[in-house]
Length: 287
Image 1 (cartoon, helix red, strand yellow):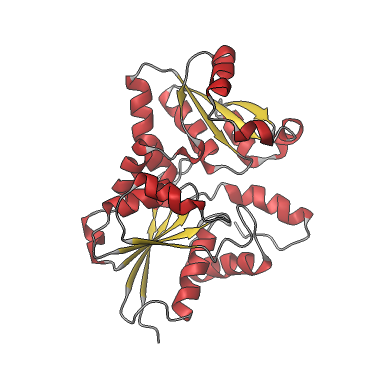
Image 2 (cartoon, helix red, strand yellow):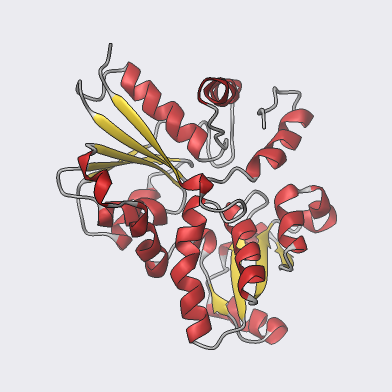
């Protein structure tokens, strides 16, 4: 009845372990690290970080050492119960757990100096992997045959993927970012990466904030999978698709609008989320 077409670009199928946007973000950073003669890569993330999982595997694949600075020193006791961190460790990543306060100062010169004393020299990748080289990689998500879409939708975590899409989009297309976390600061982060104006940020579908979920979201993800056979993660893509379909219901899109949604992967976070849901006696996400 709404005459809207929705197409999903399955970036999650690029690689079984370095999913979607993480593959795109790491590509040019790995080349740069190698070209500059670094044999270690240091980066940051939390307990569910797709970026930590992907970086660890990419390092293993390319023979470059990886170091993960992990938010939350309480995890140092129990990280073996965390699927993401266990996987990163199995891929050879060295994990260093720091307090949330110390994590806030992770980009300070003093922090870098301390880690250099401990680990030697390294190529530094920001949290979530978003920098100019990451954006260059994410621009490659869109190809010529995507020119016919009116809207390009993506989940937003650190703003890198959506900025790459904005840069690669045509001026007659609108890029719609769905914020996976609370806060309006993401607009500023995106403006740091692109000067283009053909984008909007939807901030109504974060479900309480980063890695926060609700029964309604879990139900939606499980329904979506049973109807389409497409799995969605609860942190990013589940929220984006919930948002898109809600906007379709609310007649946000004009009839005959062609929408392209980018599935950025992140499915490795499902098993960790299910552990949390089990403890809270909430329904599980079907894998």
